Length: 197
Image 1: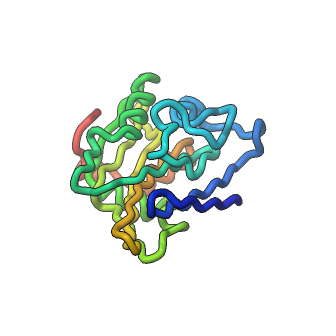
Image 2: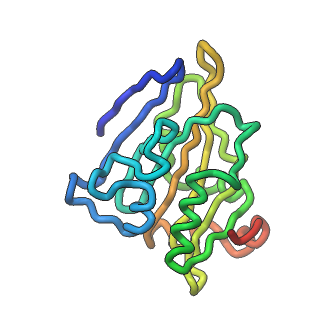
């Protein structure tokens, strides 16, 4: 495991890079989704609109992607216009699948039941907010889960104010899909369904 700490305009951003496979040796269960965010030839490099200072790649392996984004305030954050969510939805639709949005209760359940770097590398004096954003779940034509995305925000008081970062966790592959299907029954999905994107 490699750890790096960066100081950026008074806000400490902890970047953790844990690569599941050695360079050139990693194989991805979902190269389409991973490739939408990460340069598949350089495992620690984000691509496109994500290759800027607002986003950091925390982890990518065969069945998980975690990208953080610094937020200025939760007041002006609009999850309907979130760049990570838009790319996730576009990638799913490009391969003929559908994405459904679910209420924050599902997002909170996913954040609690699945690994999240937000809980393993917290900033000092931080609190984790998982009940403010919606969960996104990709389904194939037969109605089976293909992938899903949950987001949590870490809020920490610093000497100069409040630091916030959002953790965008995308879970891939049949093992994660089956695990999600085992914890979310049809009633939970029906009660928390918002809309198809």
